[in-house]
Length: 280
Image (cartoon, rainbow, N blue to C red; front, side, top):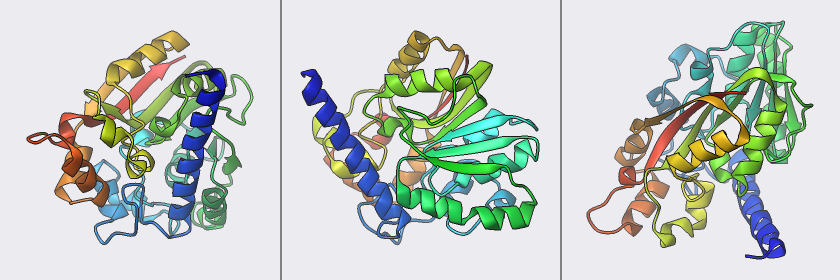
């Protein structure tokens, strides 16, 4: 593919994702795992299943949890008081608000999202967060994760939850993350990854793309990208429970993908939630 064609394709992917997540933010869709509102969508149930505790979920501003997670990067990161944290694809502020409580008044959490509708939703929730916690340590910035709106070597921890797989230029995302981190800083990411390549007809499904499946890459590809970027202490931990839960709950997207797979195969044979940890 020529450079102009590649750029056009990448921009098409970004616009597909932007449009899909704008619909989620405005309530036209229930979550990233469905092309329409679904009675099966239960953000709280999903969050508990992937490791978020009931107390943290109960304290969140209304609408911050939209069922877009595939893991719990906040828990994996073991955040410390005073740290500066950057959350890629922050959505309604789900992980940002939880991280803010952990880094306390001397810390800072910056959420970045490319969807203005999501940004408006998250910023609207800041008042509730301040009132409940007494903290004024979170902010949300408009930007693409391939071009992060933060200075070089300015953050201690980078979080992301089921977002990097949506990017059409993942190597650029990892380069930007590396640039933003302070020396010794770390990443704590939950993402979807592949155990083996998806069939072509699944990858081409627009619903699967916005649902975080079609953009996922192989686990080994993720490791190779991190190593090439310069990350060290890389730990990749596959977590199959997320995909199995989505299958068991008859999620519309996962049902649609399952029906497209070759006979006798299931989504868990291909897709896994992956915890990604590494240091600069």
